[in-house]
Image (cartoon, rainbow, N blue to C red; front, side, top):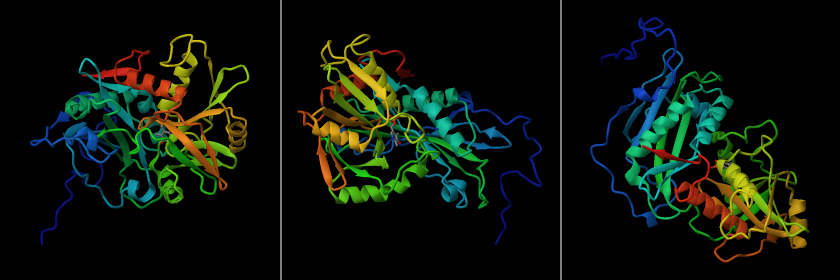
Length: 397
Ligand SMILES: *Cc1c(COP(=O)(O)O)cnc(C)c1O
């Protein structure tokens, strides 16, 4: 049997042509190989979240000597990785979630993509993966989305979900930072996140298993935050709840993989819109930020659909506790609760179980209450290019 020599050109140390400076991520170096055969796109009504992948993906890799390689857009397919890779052994995995929509002009659009790019470098930095030029990555994503445009469903509530991912590929079992990495982007056409559609979700308050803790990693989109949530999630499902409401003692942090909001009636007739502050235990959601901005803009800078001009929404980032939720529910001031995130946009919460009892939220036709509905409608209109707001909608060409 012939013994194969390693084919990476490295013999006794560095290759002769080692660059003086590791290369930055550079979108202009992209090579594009289109799939010979394109897949059939399933009907929009049959799409379940994240199950079908589009025809192409983008990959680029990093090594400490050469820096970032020339990016490739190529047919979607398996990756070949060393089983000792850091990502498999020590969970050096970071991901992002964003969506592309088709506007009335037929052009594909991304929603506030710079926020995802910034968060991705923050997350990568938290697990000591190499930094990358976020503007270049965004150029590559726009290019990929433009190539995959036929995969963007045009039905309301549908979009192309985009999953940028960066993984540590150092092949060594030594417990240390990964100095090699691979960054890739895959796309999946999606319909509404919850199979139930607009049905309000039931949350089970969970305090025995915690999703995040002070000084931990809950504020970063790291894969390692999610694996420990699946068992509590199965437990909640067994008891008839859709998602966990993650608690730290009495304190509410998030709902499933969504940021959590409540709407509380004030004595002066205005409404308070509360969400927990970004204290490191909360994922800094793009949807969360958008909701705070839009709710604060009503009615002075914009009128949210369906809400009276006389209504003021007082948005506050502040600690929320189960004790307060119970008090508000009992005195009738708890009007709405919802979870927010890219996948769902805004999901109504109908019921919250805690310590053997349920808090039942008021019910509304169509699921969402007036504030949740107004925010859902406005955000989806901005995403779909039907309403212009600041620089939130970015066209892909
Ligand atoms: C991704 C995510 C969110 C939502 O963030 P968006 O940027 O709005 O999609 C909220 N909580 C957790 C835990 C998440 O992973």
